[in-house]
Length: 235
Image 1 (cartoon, rainbow, N blue to C red):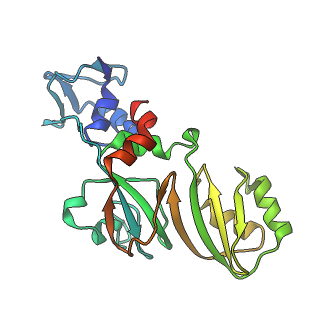
Image 2 (image 1 turned 90 degrees about the vertical axis):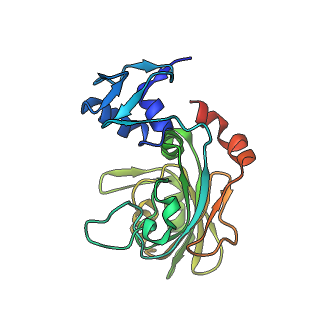
Image 3 (image 1 turned 60 degrees about the vertical axis):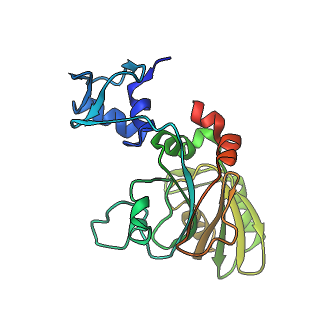
């Protein structure tokens, strides 16, 4: 059975599917020695597929990990400002894992990592409606203002979808969203007069952070991956 070259490269851990398409367009991908520069190209996997001369072998064993991201770390491989990244915290054997979505510098909690670039992309796409849940600490809030966020708001011309918001106590809110625009929770809560003091993600889809310690990483079992993300892996 054939598949798009970009998907093959993503499943080899080279990059996300979009990143693979960019590599193909740049002319650094070859199939059996021939340069392929169009993403509309299909392979069976029996060919010799290389990126910059290095053979890309498809990963048949998808790995998924949960990581408890510490505060003051960047979700990136290298920060131009020299700030600490998640890969400075992780052991060297995890350096090639792709992160799924991002948590900003000051946000803590659950970050998923995988060796499967295409899975990382699929789990980040808004169209797949994967819920993320956070605990936000604020100075104050009012239910009337929270109802504004629950209905969805437009801030500086950007539309933010309705959020599920539960009150925990006078300073903490539990928020669940699907889209995950950059700094979405911070922007929306500031807009309604409840700027965020601390933000912590506790779940991503069916994966719960639980009691995993700060800076610790844990592999998610194969049964959970197959049961929860089978459709994403096949898409």
